[in-house]
Image (cartoon, rainbow, N blue to C red):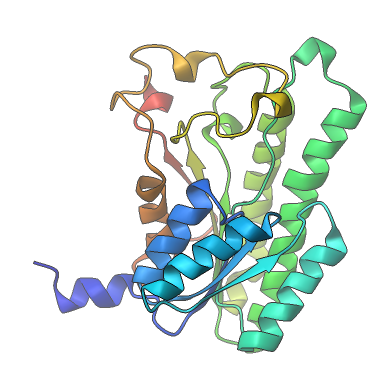
Length: 263
């Protein structure tokens, strides 16, 4: 039986949550769970049609949600996103910094352009999201939560051909700790979650990546729980960090990998 205390601990009633990359995958799972917890959702995605579908799904269940288009690779687009959220809701309480790219490039053929694109999107783009959200949280004076979606690959090599991606996620985790230090006096808590394998394992068209995923994460027995996670299973710990239940956690990296990293 769910108690009133547990509902209060995990409630997001009255909170405005921006979830980037929420048109699919982990972001979509987070949006669905946050909506159940009472948050007003901003479904932000480069694919506006996908974002609109998620927002419409939530509104059909009497949840408050809007869809906005933005491009993580374009600083001006990120700023416009948060300006629009501020105009619409006068606040930003939660950012789930989930959008990113993850093509796989063999190390010995990785080009400068490929490296720079990965860092430009996954590092600088996510930094701009943090900066713009935190500016508005500071102005609001009520604190806030920023949850960065990193990867188990940031801490432990899991898949071949991801040197550029892993470097970008390691940088994101370092930024998480720096931002947590900077923003603690304002009551803004900043954490990273590091998912392992999440279904579907390779959702993008094969043309986007040069190679299919192989490596330790795909090896039999390496995921101790025996399967990839559902997006909802990653969303649960993110809800904890966004809610009162995570009110004394900041600057942390929380691994959600089914036991892979200890196998």
